[in-house]
Image 1 (cartoon, rainbow, N blue to C red):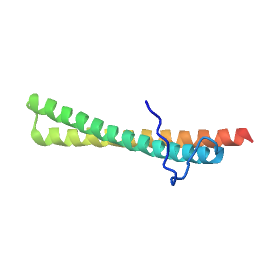
Image 2: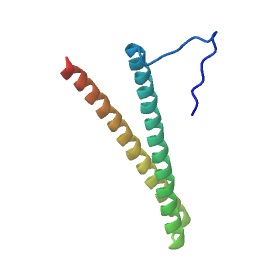
Image 3: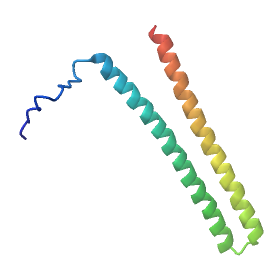
Image 4: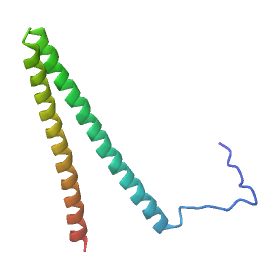
Length: 108
């Protein structure tokens, strides 16, 4: 691949020499990735909740159970699944935060 010469009026921008700028960029990328990871975990919990609740609903209707009882059971199972998933996300975030605090404390 041919390497083009920059235009003479263009400012030469070399990031490889500035370590402080590199650390700042890495910190911003890490924060963004952490936020994206939490968002994806929450999406997975929502998908899991919908799947489990719909499976309970379909199974209850397929077994010809009373509709009100099946819908109520499906809602209870979905709420329980959602609550446990959100609790696991919160605990994993808390654990990650405590580990980072511990590493900073240990690094001193």
